[in-house]
Amino acid sequence: MQKENYSNLVKNYEKKGTILVPFSSSNNPLSDEDFSKLKNYCTNVKKEFIEIGDAGEKNHLLVGRFITDVKKPEIVKNKYSKKVITILKKKKLVNFIKKILKTKKNIFLRRVQFNEIGKNCFVGYHLDIDSNPDYIAACVIQLGSKFKGGIYRVYQKKSKKFYDYAPSKGSLIISNCLYPHEVTKVKAGKRGSLVFFVSYKKGLNKRNS
Image (tube, rainbow, N blue to C red; front, side, top):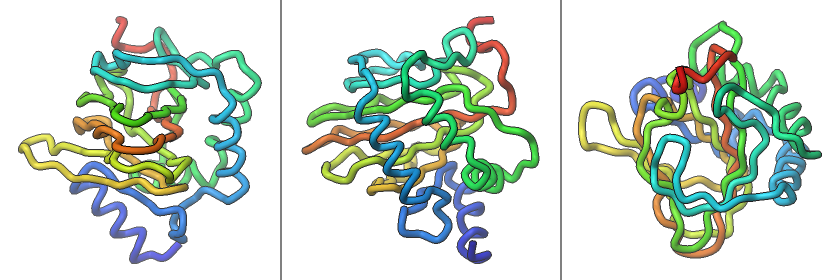
């Protein structure tokens, strides 16, 4: 990993609350093999239509679940969940996330799901900590590129300013869960991404306590 590029990533995360790492970047911790496997698992997992998200936001998308976090983190019983989790727990990926977060603490997967957003669909404005106050960061692996629109838009905490991130095939977004965000309407094609939330805690979901 190039020190200068890594330093800029950490700086941008601290300043804007979000970074996007292209698949072509030497900093991206995902291998070609892992990407192909994740895409296959997400393509084949059973999906459900969602209109209201976990944080109460208005949505319009299909979701395939691998770990849910309603009362506490629970692995969904299907033939793909454990395979997805194994890849997401690989040392290279975990260590990269920890470096961006500037922490030596253990991090835990609390919620993992595949989001498929079709034409004219979106994910509404929301705060991830409304799903669980213990969420630290949301990580998004983009699994396809044949779509238009679907911008990951992150609003700043103390102003109306926002930053837009245009995901591409294999890109990795890491976003601070204290920052409000949304996914703008997809104008054409389908936007498929694997989303997972990390935390320093693995117990009960505090939203329900």
